[in-house]
Length: 143
Image (cartoon, rainbow, N blue to C red; front, side, top):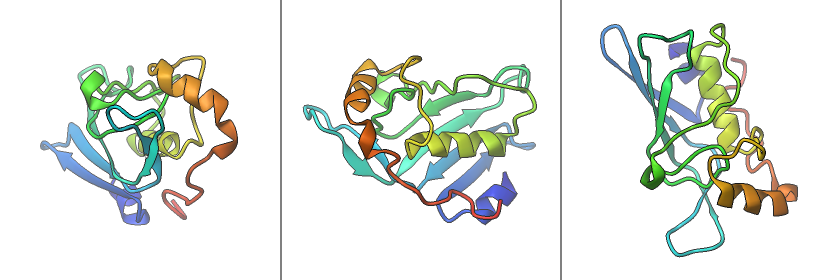
């Protein structure tokens, strides 16, 4: 995780615990958020996700909670519980790989309309797929 944070201008990682068993990850890439009462999402570049390593990690994926507004079919905003659906998981996937995968979700390089947590975002995205991905910048060049 330290190497990933050093390689990226778009990802900041703050570990917690000794040894670390939780991480706050700040992404500075382009994603979408939907303000209350609005029908059209807007671009935002500040996204925070907390990652918690439980006793069954890595056999099961870590627990993740989204902390900032987001409009994504596979991520719920904080007011709806902040759940993150990453799809398939392998115990061989590193935390750094997972963080990159989540960043690619934010950028709309990676999403699944068939396994949506947020049906409103999935329906909107289905009608606007030509606009994506939102951000073509590499999350960690050379990593």
